[in-house]
Image (cartoon, rainbow, N blue to C red):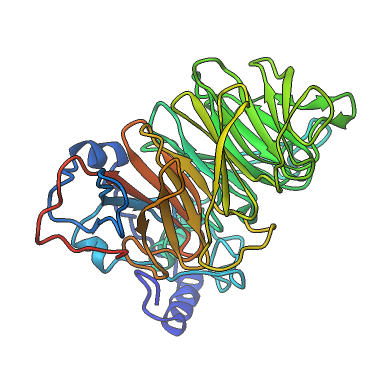
Length: 427
């Protein structure tokens, strides 16, 4: 049963009563802003903690749970209330953004503004119209009963910008979400829109948003407010990329790195979108590397990490794409080349790979030694149902897209050992 729910039958009766006798309730005010909670969080305070599993180096990797963005876009801090506030997990059989019994005409007050993002030859067919007093009250009551519209349908890749906003690709939800303390918005994707199927996301030093469109074979660029700026990879009516998935932006040089799983190469572009180099099997201006369906690329301290081989191999190159090393590791199960594990790297060069098969995020050193395992299958703190995207920000916060739990979990790297009474998860 979902939060605020009193069962489907009583809710159905409530909904009928709303249509017959208009009444209204006021929605409670939003509380718990992300930055305030993260800034004030004490990493050694009693809260769910993730300790290292089978450490193989002197460095201890320890994380404390810092909260989650839930399916409705609300940030939930680590508190006693969070121990019982849990939305019903979803799955591939339940892709909807709202309960099936709520008609589309009901406004469930989503916590983000929609940016239409239509192609130039298309336009909105329904002009905006005002709502009557009773319609607003009706929508308030249904929202109170069912909760806000679910924004996160199937969160995938993610990153953060300089304002602390979380940018999340959500192809099943036909959107790229930009979640913030105030004025969250989503860039709508899908048919007749500038982005059809969003994949990797990245931001540059100006907080411009880059979205890899794996169907159209392009990278779309938007400013920090969601206004479309340009395409990268468009050559006349053709695309430079075949199937772009992972992207990364060097916020110092402005270089864009795009891995193309179809061509099995990585493109290096300048800040204007001009191709500088190809890394992979291509014979055009390329450094030869035997990539095996590369899917992700991230920027570390003066180097790149590229994930391929179904999420079981990591290449390390310099920022020009020159190979430095690589290592392979066994996943929880044999992964197919179509799997899309997530990849991240921290300032110390530790490498993080998500594994959907066992609901974990594993940390490796540059030689491929396992340092830490975070999480297992479940819907509690530090538990995941198909973790996908992973991101480490400049303050050593880890963001994980928890796909079938429809949320993004956030963890803070500890600078001191956790208190003895903390609850350990993911061991």
